Image: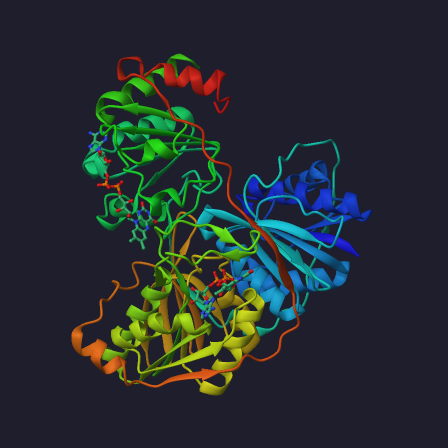
Length: 321
Length: 245
Ligand SMILES: Cc1cc2nc3c(=O)[nH]c(=O)nc-3n(C[C@H](O)[C@H](O)[C@H](O)COP(=O)(O)OP(=O)(O)OC[C@H]3O[C@@H](n4cnc5c(N)ncnc54)[C@H](O)[C@@H]3O)c2cc1C
Ligand SMILES: Cc1cc2nc3c(=O)[nH]c(=O)nc-3n(C[C@H](O)[C@H](O)[C@H](O)COP(=O)(O)OP(=O)(O)OC[C@H]3O[C@@H](n4cnc5c(N)ncnc54)[C@H](O)[C@@H]3O)c2cc1C
């Protein structure tokens, strides 16, 4: 029995949320007295993969054939399944993401494994295998007892604090045989904003709503985001109106973020928007309406005009550097 | 074109969430139920595709009789018939087994779902069902067209979109802007009453997860208001007090 962790890569390095997944898996391995291995798929810098060792993994299986170069949840699920079998893994950890949900699901069906997505804490192994997961879009939690010989967990950002130690993991090439069925879909093209900070990975998010008045007024928000090293997000009407791209839409029907700091600028704080941000550690609301519901969900609030406040905050950040 | 649309019966997005029976049951008192918003997008696109290509739409829910009003609403929006697998769905795997069992019999060209349920938010049922049926699955899909036996569609990826092409049959988890939500009209509501709703019993599944208890997040402390003429102090508070900068 062992623990297997899947990590997502970004430009050849392991993503931060994936390093949390490694630390999470390694912690379970420690409790159960077993080892934690990592699976990485795609082009990667081998020394970057070895960093998984610093978070408690003993080895990294690296699958990097040309057919795996483009993200493909079905093929990745087959690779994951092969890795589970080779490593005789009984607990599989994935960071929660669209790709991981899809590949975890397909692997669960192949393996007859139980799958729990949205896990927020380490499992309680004293009596069964109990994990806490987020439900109702962050408005509640359910603690579930996970049965099944193989357990697949999708863990949310901040489920554990990942602290780097000094270990280095061995990296081994992994190339299981894959069937053609995983490659029936053809990727025609991709549109990807390059060099943009990922919303789900970012520690700070600065987000704008209809109070920003129009796409031509976004610069003060972008300036603050740049000063803070933050990603930018928006409310649903803003992306519906095409003021900002759809992949910035945060909330119930958009992306769920869990940064350390979320700054909401000219967003009213409708319950469906809050559903996407309620896992943030600290929330700041800036709104000209003192009655805006966002202030009830925020830790810090400023009542005023975003176009007055944002440039002043940017200046204060730059001066404090 | 035979389309299966899987819908969840979930508390309205503004519902106050609370629990009963020692925090082991969702408290349904006073809660308004809706078709899952993502499932609603899937249904809306199915109706458009049927208008374009002909064929039929079956809606499927795994749930108890209290799902029926939402199933009738889906029929009013434009589905032709409905199936309800009569049970309290236990978890994602259980639900997927039920859907796969119905899909296997139906011979559907397209199985449309939402990107995720808004009660358990797992985002895994499409992948599970796809694998159980041995057909491809994709999510979240934000644009979908069908030409003959090929689907062309766009999927949201981190920081952008990916355009794909794949042969039918397929399982797709949908999200906006695949279509605009549709509101049933009077004629739809009238005809929905007589459209067939078949209730079937679930197939047996080994229990893979059991619920221990529900909890609510700790209540949020009061918001610290910073006077607008001292807005700059926010930055130092975030550094020294909140320690997030
Ligand atoms: C099923 C469903 C799902 C939904 N999903 C989502 C979702 O995922 N995400 C989402 O965001 N919404 C979602 N919504 C919509 C949601 O209900 C709200 O309509 C939306 O969040 C409002 O966006 P907003 O705050 O940008 O705009 P508004 O509600 O118009 O608020 C604008 C705010 O800006 C303030 N303002 C105006 N000018 C200034 C200024 N100069 N300076 C400072 N403040 C100013 C105003 O006081 C106001 O509070 C959903 C709705 C439904 C029904
Ligand atoms: C009273 C009650 C108690 C429940 N208790 C639990 C519980 O303790 N643990 C638990 O995991 N689940 C529970 N559920 C089931 C839950 O409502 C979901 O149906 C199921 O868990 C799948 O959710 P998911 O988040 O995995 O779906 P996702 O994978 O997020 O759903 C993706 C898509 O699959 C389709 N889909 C999902 N569920 C259904 C369904 N039931 N019928 C038709 N299509 C569907 C929809 O199109 C949906 O958009 C309960 C349901 C009820 C009514």
